[in-house]
Image (tube, rainbow, N blue to C red; front, side, top):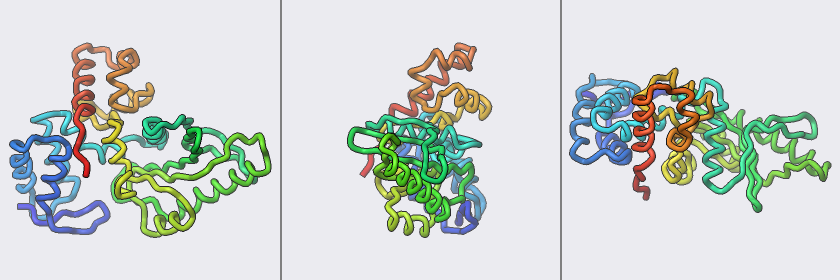
Length: 281
């Protein structure tokens, strides 16, 4: 029976059944099914990796509802928005759109010393944000202070040019560093001092990526548990980034999926993932 969990960074902690129960409930699994999932996971060896715990939970979850499995899969789904970072940039842009911003992805912006390709530009009438995205395709890799320093230097170079050129067009008010994993403590310390806003998996404590995904139902298509990695990549290449895209852009979906039965199953799973609204404190 499992006693310890080995995390992605190699550290070991005691298995906490209550954490598993909370995550299953948060994903929308009915109370009557939670016990059987927990029992399956507890049958793992004394020491198991977080990946093994996840695999066992997701395998059993699929027997009940794909929608629940998809939401439980969210953290892993963000790693699958790759291997390059562009799909993740599109995903972050979608979060900002839901927050009322107009966005552009991959925009070339003049700096005082050099030009910069900014990952995401987001603006409203009152706010103009430069967003840099740092994508990691595996757990245990944190965005460090070097990235924060690099992002601040780019922001300052663009800001200096904008001050010298009234026609520059990109007078950014703030900068955000977004990642699909976590930040190191040094990165956070520097960012707080230098005026960088962070958007990561679990940081800030409240308005983080998981929070916005659940609030606006912007689940990436990589949450789907019933289709292959190849098909997910094909969908992304056709500009289908979110589960909502699969529901609302069926003409695009039909360009990739030609089997009507499979197409309906994909749309149904996407609906199940999007329809549930988890309770947040």
